[in-house]
Image (cartoon, rainbow, N blue to C red; front, top):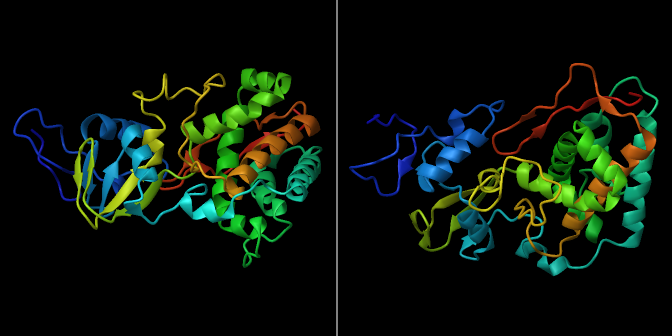
Length: 309
């Protein structure tokens, strides 16, 4: 049996027999590493385990993570669409929808005649800001726009991963051009497979029982959204980006009626349509392949394209 090293994960109830080999803590991974093999070992062998490197208990199975994110006994670390947004229900105003559509059009046509462009720097970063009327990261105003300012970086990263999941695959591009109504489903699938936020940290107000054991009262709990989204007990072929998947079960955003959630979906829809319309021959730059990085948040840092093919 392998001996545990300092910083290794600490199982809830160590067993004298059939104990999995110790697994290094979350911070042992690098930003460049693909985290999903690590997540798989967590789901299979360590469904609840304490990670001294971040001082939190790790949850990795979909059922546990989804339940934890809904559990009022786990406090702090709210996502868009969680209960904190419940006081701000209502659809995104029509004026904001028009701003998203107009901003998408302007950004796409601004780079359409370029020989090469970076969609992260020149589209993903500016579309969420433009959707808020140029407010950017200044102090938020009242109303839906102000409430969405804090979610800018999450929406930027989600948009970059969405484009990476679609634009490099001619079959997906063809399907979405042919049936634009599938863009919403593709967006949800991207949030499931490649969430911009991999880890949501909360705190247990009281002792809580989960499938892998018991979380002590007062303990920090790291809900591994990235691991949950690839759980084969919840999703058929979870590593596959599947446009036909009807229920993505994404956990990036909560189920509440939050303006930031709807605004992000509008940006994905209008943004992709604008790119399709302005750049029919859009493709990756020569030799470029998107690569996501990050331990707690994750997305491609660049998306180099040739707008004119």
